[in-house]
Amino acid sequence: MTIRGKNTNTAEIELRPRREYAIDVLKAVAIVCVLTIHASTGGYGSPIRSFDWWASLFWGCLTRAAVPLFLMCSGALLLDPHRRLSVKRLYTHNIWRLVVALFCWAVFYKLYHLIEQDSLTWSRVLQALREVVLFNHEFHLYYIPMMILVYIFIPVVRLVIEHASKRQFQYLLLVWFLLGIVYPLLRHYWPLRLLPTSMSQFGLTMQYAAIGYAAAGYYLKKYPLPQRLCVLCAGLGFAITYGMTTLLTITHGELYTQFLEGMTPGVCLLAIGIFGLLIQKKYGAKSCAIAAHVSKASFCIYLVHVCFNCIFHNHGLTVSILPCIVSIPLLVCLNFALSYVVYLILSHIPVVNRYLV
Image (cartoon, rainbow, N blue to C red; front, side, top):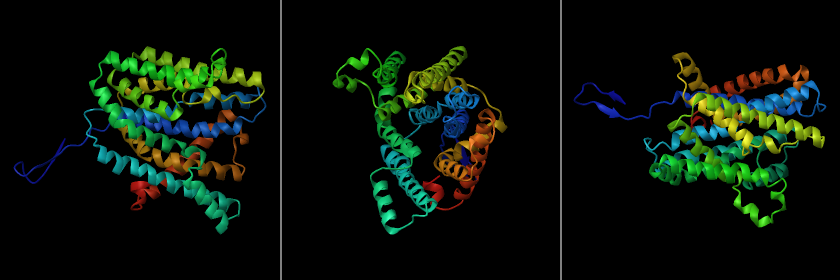
C-alpha cells in the first residue's frame, strides 16, 4: 500500500499488488533457458555420441523447463485470489495485448524472411499475410496462443481453486499430471498404443495441459515443497529427459524428441523442482533489482531472440565455432545482450512499449 498526498486528510490511498521477486527470478531463469534451448539445437546435428552431441543435449535437456516455468509464474500470480482481476481487464488488457503482439511479431518475421531471401514482392507479401491470418507463424510464437487459452480459463480456475481444499487441489493436479503429462506420452508405447484411436481422447492436448502448469505454479507458491523433494524432482526430471533422449536417439540413429516436449514427465518434474526451489528463497536487494529488469524484458527477449539466431546462422556464427559445451553458453549470452538492447529501445517507444514488449 502507498499513501500519496499533501497531508493525511487528503491522502490518496492506492492499493498495488506487492512485487513478487521470486517470480522475477524464475522468469529471468526461464528466459535464459529459452535462449539455451534454441542455441542447443545447432549442435544436435553433430555425429551421435560425439562430444559436441553430448554437450548439446546436456544444455538442451538441462534448460527444457523454460516454457513450463513461464506458465507456472503466470499461474502463481493470476490465480492468487488476493489479486483483483476482473474478466473485463483480463480481456481488454492481458489477452488483447497478447493478440496484438502475436500478429505484429508474426508479420515482422514474415517480412524479415522475405527481405533475407531477397523475395520482397507484392505477391509474396500477400501470401505471407494470408499465412499470418491462418496462424502459420514463426515456430516460437506458438507460446502466445497457448497463453491466450490459459488466460481464457483463468477466471474458472480461480473460482475452483478458491473453494477447493488442499486435498481437492492435489486431486486436480494428479488428474492433470496423469491425463496431461503421463498418458499422452505413454500412448506412443506398448501396450497403450494398441488401444483404439478413441482412447486418445482421454489425454489432454498440449494447449489444455498448459492450464495445469498454471495451477501447479500457484499450488507450489501456496504450499511450498520441502527443498530436498524439490532437488529430487529436478534431478529425476533431468535424468529422465537426458537419459531417455540419449538412449532412444542412439537406438533410432536420429534425434528422438519425444522426451524433450514440455508436457512430458521428465520436463514436468524438472520444472516442479526448479520452481519449488526458487519460489521459496529469499533474495537480496541487488539480485531482486537485476531479476526485476530481466523479468520485465523477458517477453520482448522471447519474441526477438529468434531473429538474432537467424542472423548468427547467416553470418556463420554457429555452435561449431568452439566446442558446444562452451559455444552454446557464449551464443546465449550474446543473444541475450542484443535482445535486451532491443527491449531497451522498444520500451521507450509509445504504443510499442505497451503492446509489443
